Image (tube, rainbow, N blue to C red):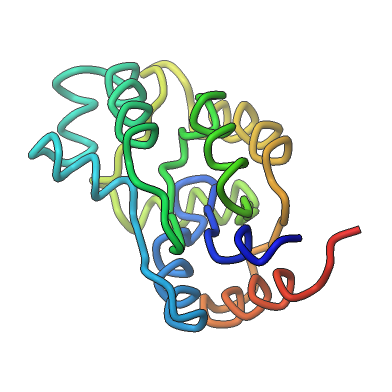
Length: 173
């Protein structure tokens, strides 16, 4: 693994998997900037993700997400992506070429519980899809694009950040 790829780390995973929380901690550990692409989208659109979904639909949010991620500068940082980023092959190819992609793997029960703690959180999916549907649709995509996978169900965010740091310091087979 090249030193460049360890200096740009993209976090992928379901909403509630800890991408933002772990990302901030990992950025501090590694002395890197932290970029939350959901915040970039909200700044550009002057609306929350839930408001965008309500007003324009989940497909519009995905289109905006793709435009923001394809246009953003990539520099040494921890990049926390939106959960739906894996639906865009263009985004994932860009992230794969510029970073180490780390999948924060959470079980469905963990995701469901954590999302219940933030009821205003929007999930970019058709209205007739359950959380379970979205979960089972996305997991194979996360696994496909990940360079590193870290389980997040049992450990505290600081411990998870340490696991990621250790995995980046260990050559991958």
